[in-house]
Amino acid sequence: QLQLVESGGGLVQPGGSLSLSCAASGFTLDYYAIGWFRQAPGKEREGVSCISSSGAGTNYADSVKGRFTISRDNAKNTVYLQMNSLKPEDTAVYYCAARRVGSSISGTCWYYGMDYWGLGTLVTVSS
Image (cartoon, rainbow, N blue to C red; front, side, top):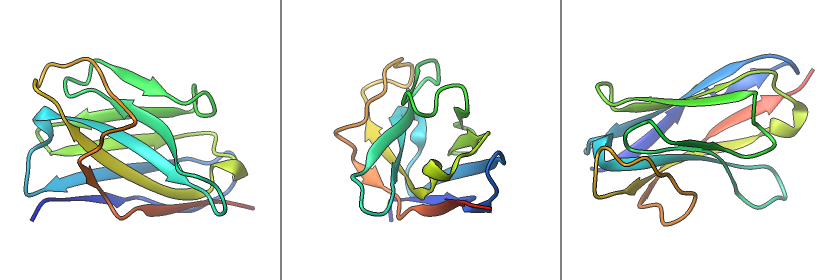
């Protein structure tokens, strides 16, 4: 069974940090670009960050630049999202998604055309 599983969400105070993980099972991530998305209550889902299959290419939404860092460890079949200086407006369900690409050394990532989605993990930033 092919699936992505997010973990690491929880309740954190403003200014705090969380590290999210996205683990794949049933397939290897080497040929996949990965995106992190979030959906806050009453809002549309938005792309937060993405990473290419090689790990060399990354992208961040303006709202998280300088605070979030995406990384991947293909040996562990896992992608991470380190979130620092969290703000109440970061509160959302965070999802990871994978898009198959033709190469393990691609330097491009996307926020559309995703092939697999996880079920999400809730991040709440509140005092």
